[in-house]
Image 1 (spheres, helix red, strand yellow):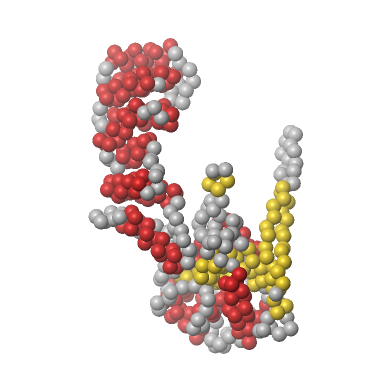
Image 2: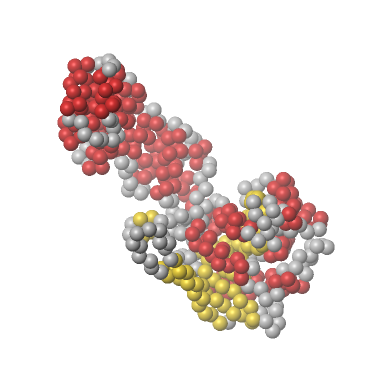
Length: 461
């Protein structure tokens, strides 16, 4: 077996629109490992497969493997989608990760005679000689080599389009195959024996993941997809239609298909329901999630800040004060992260926990932290509205604004405007309101909160 490197060079040339623009060439390189093998199942032939590794691949980690047939047309496309969907790159502290799927290895399988190797059998279930040899080549030669030489997790998937979609789907009928996920794009229907067996397989304790992509303009290759869509209802089986023809369907459907292979990854759909249970425990919930990902995909995983952000927002949206407090406690104790006061203020306000929201407002007012200072100055209208409409206390709103004015004199103009506005519109402390309005008139300068016309409207009230 021979191992070489294949390099793809991409040149990007910016367009010149106007003026003096410097034009440069940016070179980006993708490195794939290319293998040649003498196969026991294709006598006298040299077979090719390629491997694309994730960014920052490490032998100390474990990776799912996505195999794709039709290597000449599909490999680079699958590798590109997988790369960006599984990106976990952090540069200079900035998180550019998508992390929609776990980082995965992609293996492209190339054909010497695609027509013979992948020819469907439209008169029964048995594989023809060419597909039988291709199956043996993949299962007995390529997969074992990948397993031996790369850090694999044990979760393998395979992708096919048109004839190779039929081939990958036919693998479901085999007693033992090394693939737990299958993507079939433009799946042609077989004879009724094949079609019926496929539907029954998907309906009965189906323990794999199956995705079918069908093109609305791909008339000869979408009938079976619609039958599956109609007859099978399961979270691990997905059928999706695209406004595509036979040729462009892979480009349209691959992203969805690859994501479906990992449909449990970062899938927290039941969190809002579970977090409302009386005995809900954050550590236990996260532990079960990690166990599920380990069992299904063979990988270790961690919860991301975005995941906790989703949890917090969901508890707020459902008015789940207890769940919210459990999450904040977990973040502080386990992740050593304390949510900023301004965020807690907004969350508590949305939760209708007005007492704690009020406490946080005064903490923000008295805090020496620079971020709290900026947030208060940037959200004067929000705090004013909180005291008036949530607490029903325009007098306390004015008192709060007066204190804020003394604490942050650089924003005296803005605080005076809201004192005047509150006084006049709520008909309280009129003397103070008129004095504040006069100050705004005499010291006006452009700001984010009001214009001179706003002062005029207040004067007319």
